Image (cartoon, rainbow, N blue to C red; front, side):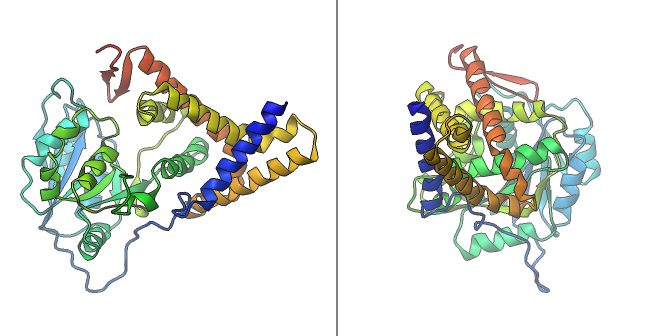
Length: 375
C-alpha cells in the first residue's frame, strides 16, 4: 500500500509540474484564426499547394474546394500516390494539376516520396503542404502568409481541428491534441532558442527555399513522424518555426469506431519514444501514476492524506485539460473520463511497441514498414 501512496504522490507532482511550467504546455494561447479584413489580399500566385493523396476519394473534393476558396492564382498540385479509387479523376475535375506518383523506393515512406515528386514542380516562394482530408476556411492561407511575413517565420503549421461527431471521437480526439501539446509544448517549439521542434503535417506553409536548403524530404525519407522531423530540420538550419491551433483548418476524416483511432495512434506511438524500452517503461510509470494512482488511490486506501492527494490530482487534471475542452467546445464533464482516456492511449502505445518487436514498424495506407528488428 505504501507503493500506491508514493505512486500517487508522484502522479500529483507530475500534474502540478505541468501547471507550473512557464511555457504552459496545456494552454491554447498559440492559435491562428481567420481575421476580418475588407482589403485582404486574395492573390496567391506566390504559393504552390502540394497535396499527397492515396485513395482519398471521399475527401479530396472537399479539400480542393477549400483550397480554391482561399483566393486566385495558387498552383494546386495533387500527387496521386497509386490510388485505386477515383482520387485522381476527382482532383482533375476540380482543376488541380495531378502528378501520377510512382511506388516509393526502398526506405521511403509513401507520403514523403509523393511530396518529393511534387516538390520538383514547385516554382513559387511558398509551398503549402496539405493533407488530402483537411478543409480550410476561406482566408486562412492569407492569414498564414501574413503571419509568416510579419514575424519572419519560414515554417508555420496548424494543428487541424479533428472530427468530433460521435462518442469515440469526442472521447479521444481532444485528448489526442492535449497529449500532443504535452509531448511537444508549443510554447517551447515556437522559441528560436529552444531545441524543441514541432509541426502538424496536415497544414504547413513553408518557404520553398528553406525546404530545399535542408534537403527537403530526402533527408527524412523514412521518418514516420515526418512533420516534427521536418520542423526540426528547418529549425536546426537557423530558420524560425511556429505551430498553433486553429478552427480554420478542419479534418473531415471521421472515425466511426475505436479501431481506426487505435491504428492511427499505434502507427507512431513507439516511434515517438525512439523505439526505447526504457522510455516506454518511464512513460508507463508516469501515465499509471497520473491517470490511475493519483486520482483513484482513494478507492484503495482509506485515509485523509489519500483523499487530499486524489483531490489535488483531480483539480490539476481539470485545470490542464479544461482549455482544450473549452477551445473545442466540449463539456467539462469529459475531464472525468481522463483515467479511461489515459489507459486507452497507454494501451495503444504498448500495442505499437509489441508490433515493433514483432518486426512491423508501421502499417498505413495498405503499406507495411518493417522495423529495424527485421532489417
